[in-house]
Amino acid sequence: MSNSAVISTLDRERTLQALESERFDLVVIGGGITGAGLARRATLSGLTVALLEGEDFASGTSSRSSKLIHGGLRYLAMGDVGLVRETALERKVIFRLAPHLAERRWMVLPVRSRAALLKFRAAVTLYERLGSVDRGDLHHNWSRRDLEREEPLLDRSRFPYACAFREYLTDDARLVLANLRAAAASGARLLNYAPASGIPLENGRAAGVEATCGLTGRPFRVRGSCVVNAAGPWIDAVRRMEEPDAPAQLHLSKGVHVVLPASRLPLRNILVMSTGDGRSIFAIRQRDVVFIGTTDTTYEHGPQVWPDISIDDVEYLLEPLPRYLSVEPLTRSDVIAAWSGLRPLVAQPGKKPADISRSDEVLLSRAGVVTVAGGKLTGYRPTVERVLESVARVLGRELPGAEEGPLPGGDFDGDLERLARSLVEEFGISEPVGARLARLYGCEAAEVARLGATPAAENAPLLNGEIDWSVMKEGAARLEDVVYRRTRVALYDSEAGPRIVEPVARRMADLLGWNPQRISDEVERTRGRMAADLSFGGPGT
Ligand code: FAD
Image 1 (cartoon, rainbow, N blue to C red):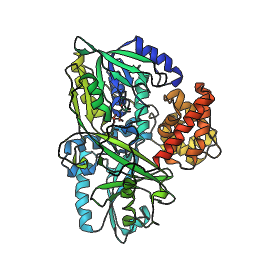
Image 2 (spheres, helix red, strand yellow):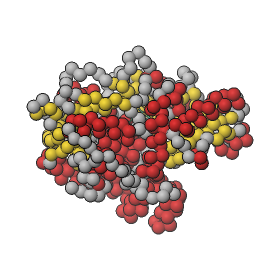
Image 3 (spheres, helix red, strand yellow):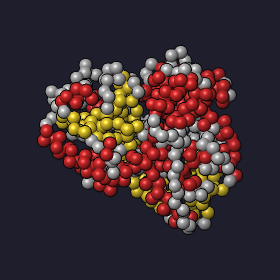
Image 4 (cartoon, rainbow, N blue to C red):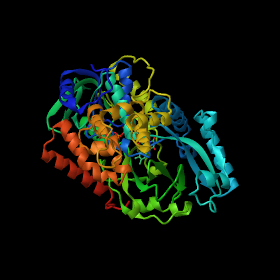
């Protein structure tokens, strides 16, 4: 088995053959954060693992989140103290495993009065205790004068005070990839574009997974002693492969984010704003953009890879801006990108999506299939531990605990500024590109730049080396994989995004042997996707 953290699309055929010929302790359906974290953790306990992802890795909910590694202050108000403690503690762990994927940021909660400030301080203090927050990371109370310096865009005549507390910002899809690559380093066999279509039984017990190669249409079968259904919003569909009458477990809730250029909305921190219906949403500065999210509405159209975004969603997210900030009015025409995802919440009949607990639930079927529902990106490790308890029961053996070392890219002291400077010096790239590479690839950034430090197109921030790295190390098999999930250029760079689609496709074609028809299909599909993201034609919610 392999010992390097590589998922190479060039090796796709060999991976398929291994999946067919080997027998595994564990077959995981779903390559979001839950499946990826499980694959990583199970290999550390010595299990042999296969993982099948129907689309691209992280193409489901795990690339559509608010990208916060947070305990969720609002869940305290819901009384979910256990969940808050667990996820608040996880913040430091994820920072230790992958400092480049856990950026320490201030979350700013603006308030109108001293009395309101005192109320929030009490909640934040409890939150900090639950999360064992270090002294240097404890909250600050910002006065009007502090706000003038720290968040000048906030309308201080309305909000003269704010409580600023520590949260962490990640790149959700890259956290998934880091876990998958760590699993690959310990021998896991991982394949994207490989939808599972059946769970064959032997003597009444699940004996593996039937699947198809989504790129060639070739069916194949993976043999395994335990099957885990980590299909996120699709878990009910996977359960029905085994038990056609299985009752629905999930309440799907749609969450939309819109992206605005930071030149129009030059925020510095993560800002919490209240919506007209009393919910909290975030405005989050990331590179040269600010993204705003999220909505939380019941989604009744069944699980979809690209849930629609309606104009109502967009207006709902833009509405609070003039109430909080001193900015020119912003409208849908200022939105440069948008994404929408589905929360796989464990149904609690009678409750609105916003009131449903974000806790996870692990189910074990008669045939021994383990299904995991609900959960948070932040809490993926504790979720995975609970899944592993059921896996151990199915396998009939104890699984040893394991010390988790850094994830790929995370083996450095966390000083991203120094890392970025060294990249600028070594490769002659601009400071913003150096900073972006350090954040995306951590201590592997120099290896990425060594593959090609030239821009993918004139003045584009994306380097050719990043395209090669995506294909050779991170399993990118389609153009969309590179621009949406490996580099995020489609979401965070309205200028470069459409411009570099063709150059990226040509470079991928050189690596993967695509013919002119395939290049033009990939380009058309990705451009169509980008246009659809901004059409806001979905049904109102
Ligand atoms: P997914 O990421 O959806 O993964 C399931 C995978 O299974 C998919 O990739 C899918 O393609 C695959 N699959 C489905 N069917 C099959 C099949 N038949 N064969 C093979 N593969 C299949 N959490 C936080 O901690 N912080 C946040 O800031 C945050 N913000 C959020 C904002 C929004 C709008 C949403 C929707 C969620 C947010 N969450 C957040 C929650 C978090 O994103 C999810 O809990 C988490 O990503 C779920 O991961 P998952 O692996 O269970 O599901």
